[in-house]
Length: 299
Image (tube, rainbow, N blue to C red):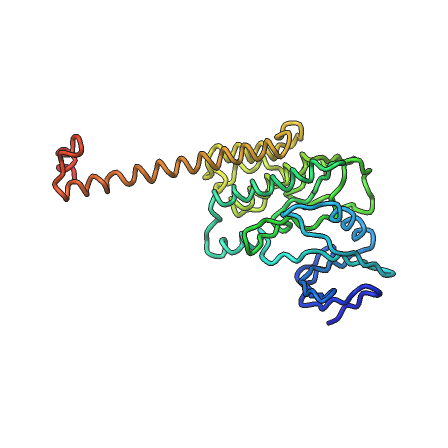
């Protein structure tokens, strides 16, 4: 299938890779003799202009590179970097299919990565709020890089509420203030979305509309206390009670990750003690370990 772009260039469509409010294709182009794989996002003209305006102003390893915008009479196509990999939703499904959950430390590392790109958005002038943080909107690339995708409802803080973009997010991940009669959005809305996303990855359950119900989730109850407290803090219904910014979120996630690593180190060390003592017993080196005679009797 060929998609001819008038007066620009030609894209060879490889396959459709997604469909929702827009249709996304993987395509190839050979502009100026340089072959390149790209993503073509076909959507309404208003949404395409909005997303192209945002992407063209950003440069970050966790944001797709913007290449081009093509507009015809009824639709428009945003041409951007194609990310080879899987969404975090697909990543989670691969574990659930085996009756398992992703490693907690790995998920925390992902959360820290996402803090970096969200902080980058929030510190733009004017600040940008992504508004739809969820596993389906995060790609895990083949090289382990996380990429935040789908910017068609991201908003600058100076923007008024745009009736052309009524959808403000996804149930379960959307912050309560975005569901108010007069919606209010800020970086704190993304703090909520990130907390809900981490909850989903760590428990395998879609987040409830009211995250205070998470206390009834057995999988949530099995998480370390410090991590449970962090997720509930991030998903406070009142945005004023959430972490003030992504820097604060990153700090608490890094502290939690460090605590888990230290805890695992101690557990592994303690598990190794009987093995070491048995080695001394087997070699008859009782004199090298105090009270080993008693241990010999015990084993």
